[in-house]
Image (tube, rainbow, N blue to C red):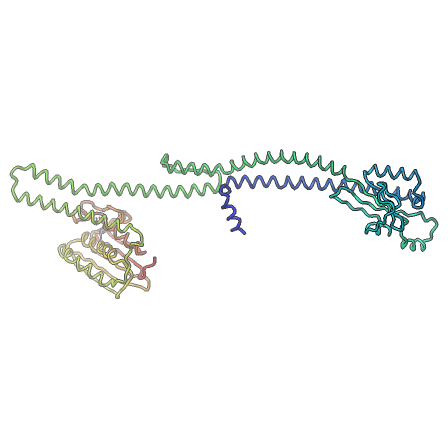
Length: 492
Ligand code: ADP
């Protein structure tokens, strides 16, 4: 049923407007009672008027029936007084009077057309048995009344009266009373009430239009406010507090606006950071080149030294761009994941094999501890990048003769990789920022060891893409432990 109503509503486009619906509801709520009341009043009046007319006519016809019985009119219809009286009745009620004798024969008809005919109808028969009847014929506009004519039976004992009950009436007065007067009044009343109803409807129409406009105004304000925010006129939070509903919509919109602002700010910050980071090696190269050019007859050794520095800067620039590209790849959707079953032990061994030469150069020892063999559904390239960054950091931010311990473990749902080092540690206040792009605790040290500030951002993105988590525990000058937990089975 609701689906049908919805389908119908869908056909009339304007009905999809809240304003149009409110207008119609208010209009109907006013119109239906007004029409019902008007019809009820007219019906009531008709019932009352017909009732009064019937009662009045019945009284008069009772008196007439007595009169007919007393004067013996049933036996002699030539009585002038009665005939005049009958004409008067006929005129008074704008109707017809028929007198029927015991043989069901019409002995008198004020219209003079049915005299001598036999009338046997249900009403006449009932009336002969003593009960008068009334019947309102609305369509033809008259009331039919039958009144029994009973001769007076004086001096009858109780027993005889009981027997009399079985006796039929002497005659029946069959009359029709015109209800034209009632119909005319009803028509006038109907016209007047219709005009009244129309006036009331005009008022309701005006009220419905005004109410629909007033009630929907807050929603228009919401649209306007959102439109202004969209056009960028304002960065402020908007507010339309007229209804709880509009307040909720605006709250949700403000939250969205806030989120977009955060995103926009972080995008701007990222772009400015990228520009800055890319500019630094370029500036160094320019300074090196300029100073070489300024030097007349510079020795080959100086050239070699400066060119080595320039090559290092190029390498750094390359690394930043490479890392940025990795980050962009991480920002893509889950559908870009290339998931396959991977032997994590083998993967870690390969990573550590690649890292060992760097570690050796810095005099750092790498220890690998595998608690159990682990095979998991992961994106091998992304996970390798994530774990390599952690191990590389552990080597980079370590001390002379330090160590790095990598531990692989698993339960029935997750596998975990712990990368612990005996390095310089991360100050507590910096720990919540280390995953931000380009964040470095000590910029100059990071630069020295070849950091770009993007490594942990890449690692975190990769871990989150695997629906995993990353945690850090660190004490300054004691060491740092990163723990990565990743589900064994990749769930989309
Ligand atoms: P970077 O390229 O500079 O290493 P990362 O995003 O990998 O950038 O790390 C961010 C910062 O976190 C680093 O600059 C460093 O200060 C700190 N950090 C990361 N790993 C460690 C670690 N194992 N020990 C100490 N500090 C670390």
